[in-house]
Length: 196
Image (tube, rainbow, N blue to C red; front, side, top):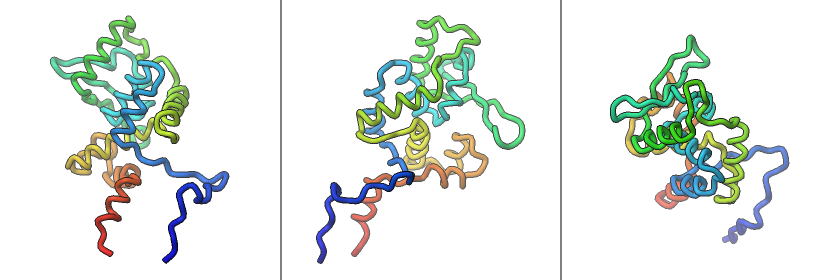
């Protein structure tokens, strides 16, 4: 029987090759969120984690697109960028997060037409990546929050068709193809359960 090669002695990934990012877990998200340097970035990360929206879908919206209707809070966003005319959709927010955004808009005196998140998507991606490298010891991208949202839904028993609808996908195969990634821990758990 041959001995396993220690992880420290595995060959590095060749220069120019792309490495698939390890999916984020809820624990990763909490550590990453704590490492973000500014409340604005934390708030955006919370919105992305809670809604499954892309950062560009949220960052393009001004204050009037975040609104309350009774006890419920929503963000109005545009969907359907590739096929046909865009459709406006109201995406529900967690009630606590909705109140947090409402407070943020008031405290910062944001008027209709004022963007809520006044930094570029590229800037947020750089800050997010640096926070991930600091907190997790590896790179991460904000889009992984969308994948975490999807995994949370599906692992929680939400049918794939419903998850696809919440993500704005017209075909659930898109959801399965792009967002059903197994983490290293899940792969290890599956391997552990497989009979030998």
